[in-house]
Structures are given as C-alpha cells and as structure tokens.
Amino acid sequence: MDKNVINRKFKRLVITIETPQAKTGNGPAVGGKVNNLMLIGAEENNGKEGKKYLIKGLRGWINHAMMTLAKQEGIEVCHTSEKTETQKGESLLPEGFHSLGKCLEHKNECVKHKLMGSFAKASKLRFEPVIIISKAYKGKIPEEVQSVHIATDNRNALMQQSKTAIQDFGERYFAGEFELKIEFLKEVTKEELGFLLKAILYAPEIGLGSASNNGAGKTKMLKVILQEVVRSRGFDRQGKVIEEEKTRNLWKEMEEGLAAWPA
Image 1 (cartoon, rainbow, N blue to C red):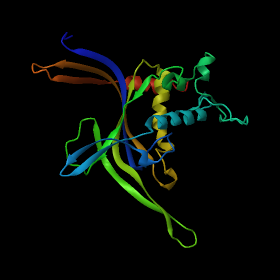
Image 2: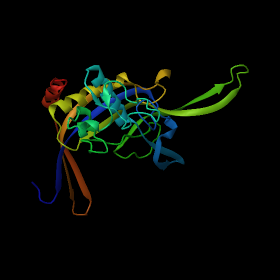
Image 3: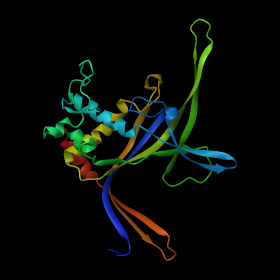
C-alpha cells in the first residue's frame, strides 16, 4: 500500500433508473410539489443560466417500498412516524406496523430499522444526492451532475360555470435516466441486503413523487449493481489532489441476499 495516499474501502449499490416524467419535491415518496426542488447552483453560458436541481424524496421512496413489501409478506416493520395516535386517541398506525424505533426498545429490531435507523439509531445507508441539470445546457457540467430533460408543465384551474382561469401554475418535471448511489456505512447482513434489493425492485410499483394519478412518477429499474469500492486520494508534485476509485462487482453477494429474505 502506498503510504503517500489515504484509502477507504466500502460497499455501495449503483442503481440506474429511467422515468418518462417525474415530479419530485419535498416530503415522502408520494407527496410534495416539484417547484420546491432545491436550487443549489447556477453557471453562466452565453448569458443563460444552467440551473442544477436536487431530486428529492428518493430515500422516502425506497422507505415506503420497504413498508409495502414487508406488509405483503406479513412481516411487521417500522412505520415512518413515531406517533401512535391523535390527540383524540385515534390510531395513526396502519395494521402491520409499529411506530418508528419501537422495535429497538423491545430488543426485537425489525429489518427495516436495522437498515434505515431512526432518531435512536443511525442508518446503515447513505443515499448520495442526485443532482440534475437540463440536457439543453451546453456549458461545463461537473462530474457529479447528471443531464436529463427538464421542463415545466404549465397548468391552470378553471371555474366550473364560466371556465375562467382562477389559478395558473407551473410544475417542474424531469425525464430520462439517472443514477442513484446508496453507500453502506456499516456491514449489512444477507437478510438486510435482500430486503433492500427487493424493495428497490418493488419501488416502481408505488411511483416516484407527485401527480402519479395524472401519469407522472412512472419509473423503470434498468440496472442494480453491488460494488466493493476502494477510494484513494493523494497529491501530485504540483499539490493537486488526485482521487481514484477501483471497483469490483459483487454479484454473488446479491444472489445470496435475494435468497435470504424473506427467511
């Protein structure tokens, strides 16, 4: 090992996703307005801005897929909320779920909590931010930014009798392929890996983002790869930081994980 560089070894999932139209925003997988997409920067090119956006709700999307899949298999897992009832005493928990983190208190931690964690315990997973920019932008694009089609769906609401427009609004949407990376911060068991992989495969069934009833949010999983990554950084003689990654695909571990859940 070269003593002049630092190294880190870890595992991650690299997921290639395709959507014909998605409107993601704040909130859980099936909510939020896309015009709340976070503007994180801009570059100038011939007087035109190249706006970059952060696709929000991806962690929540997988989280909800986990819940739906577990319920189908008859396995109780954490809900997304710690609240169990309203002020009037009405239950907030659907049948088949316990409140977030409650299984940890009872020393019977569910598979979803082992992966996603709660306020009581850190997650084993880190969802890397997915930053997108319009394919129409011709300026220099940083390596971590992905190009997709981005446009605005202009809509208005009409009065029932006069058909007069009473509200005009636009919703930002994007379309195309993008890549989501999930980094493992801790080692996961075969059962946990299998649960995560099957939740990823199930996620297209629940749709991504808002306006799913109007045709938005359809997705297709094109590729899912489990990698072992060795990342190194060092300096050249001019002081420039040189970063390299070496990867190895772990298909055997994926197979074992898929077979391990449900037990």
